[in-house]
Length: 345
Ligand code: 3EB
Image (cartoon, rainbow, N blue to C red):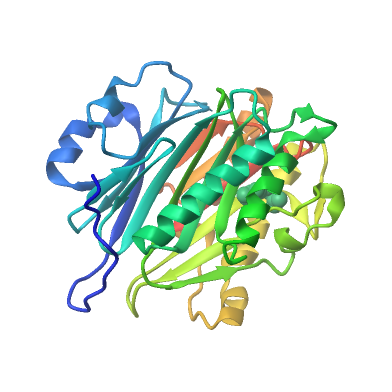
């Protein structure tokens, strides 16, 4: 377990990480494990039994995110690699690396501790491992926060998490990757992320949205530490764009409070603008993406009664060939009814 593969690059080899979002009923993880090198498996369900994940063994980074899918029992997000993989872990995290990519899961039970402290602790441990393993260029992070909109000490819990996370980023380079910060059920802070050995990412902002790290203090003492997207450039042929959790925010304000249809449309428009050639060209990226190109889509829905409206809009907006998971979750601002993310690959 101590023997992890230090990040190295040789040009002959072709680095490739694959990600699939699949309804759990459609596949057997054991079959995939026979054929592919698995970096990690994230399950999205509100089930209590996870024998399916245990079958993969102790070493593999796996995690159930307690979140109910609207249409399925559970989803798997499966990360695989063309390269052989080494695994490692400590008390709170597990990681897998293939010489190019580093996949990491963190699960911390709150146990009455302050969320600011847990957020800082989580990210301090993450950065320590990333630096030690030499995979410190973060592509994408997902943060799942129980009771995200509840208040404690007169502060919304999401802002406490942001505070602790920001404190850790401050001492670890202040570089913000694409991220999701979303509610979940259960009593553990669950984080997973992908990073790379080489610095092949560009962090992308949206001209119609204030960069989150510049949000005014009314949204929290410390701003959220994330970019709107990460562009990962492998070579002239292969790139990937990770789109952060995106919501109905223009500038730094929530728009269309109480109108779920308009929030959903605004969210999609935010994504269109973000991934368009006119935005990407500001970063020297000569690509043009549309909603049709997005895969591994997650649509987080706050209220059950909004599902049909959101599903109608999203199933028309995205390509029928791509995978979409509709998941029930609270969004980081109480007035946000929907949040959408995805991956262009
Ligand atoms: C927003 O724009 C929506 O805290 O990591 C989206 C993506 C959101 C990531 C995070 C929060 C985060 O502020 C919320």
